[in-house]
Amino acid sequence: MSAEQTDVRADYTMQSVITTLHSYDTEYSADSVEWCPHRPHRNLFACGTYQLDENETNNCGSSHAVRKGRLLLFSYNIENNSLTLKQTIETSAILDQKWHQQIPSVAVVNASGEVVMFNLSLEEQLTKIDILSIPITDGGSDQLALSIDWTKQGDRALVSDSNGGISIIRTDKCGMRIQNRWTAHAFEAWTCAFDKANDNVVYTGGDDAVLCVYDIRCLNVTVAKNKSHSAGITSLLAFHHVEHLLATGSYDDNLRIFDTRYMKSPANQINLGGGVWRIKSNHHQPDQILCACMYHNFSIINLHSDRSIVLDTEYNEHNSICYGCDWSYNSNESESKYFATCSFYDHKLCLAVLKAQK
Image (tube, rainbow, N blue to C red; front, side, top):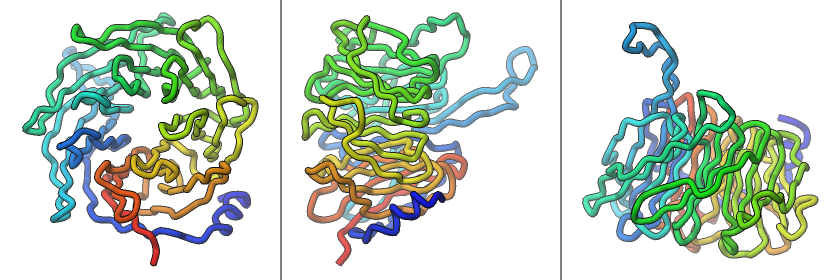
């Protein structure tokens, strides 16, 4: 740990306490967790896994590496504190997933360069209803779909890929189709997000350490670029509750807060250590942010109205790369706040509760 990181942690007093309620072995390496936003299914969350099998044998008898995964659907009962695996779906390796905000469906992006839609039944089972392959534009043969984000209305999805591309996908009764596609980054486009106040504005971040802002009505013009990150940009969080507010995570260990009206430099930043892979805002308390710090831990920070950032507490239950995390919609602001986390090589999923320290 660097001196800068040590100083950050020495300055904070823990405000909350985290208690692990369940720990589960996902068998395959786990990298994403997403809670269902829809009533009456808010007891559900999906976990995505990514397993590289280098000894898979093809039809000709030769060995080749295969990226395979599973989509795991869990149910958590708060009243009796029980965690149940309801369904396992074999898939290509999963990189990211997001629940549709208007209908009970979840979209998964995978190592085959696909977007796969699953519908949730009243019996709380997922069924594949549509699949879309992201076109490869650079002449290559291998492309991973890396991240996905929905508009609030759910009429469009934004997908980033390993060739630096960004795709806008239109969804309707006829299914999914590519509406626009462009190259945004020189290397992997790790992350992408719609602006929550204006879904004509999108943000992208890549392994080239560039943060881009686009207006999808004129994609031949980049609205803004920020090059303040010293390593690849891995996560983006556009806030629902405050206009012109954007958070970024990076391999350079920093969580940054931007005022999107002034993109030359961040309004504030904090070094959390380990590389910030995922940023998730509490659905009921948006200023409370859960961060997956890959090679360190999961950290919870509080963002104040003056854009100051305070480290609340840290969760050190995982011993491998901390990738996936999300808050339960059944949490509330004043009492218990539930969240799920997962880590990679130890294929570990945890369900925990955050409470204010007495």
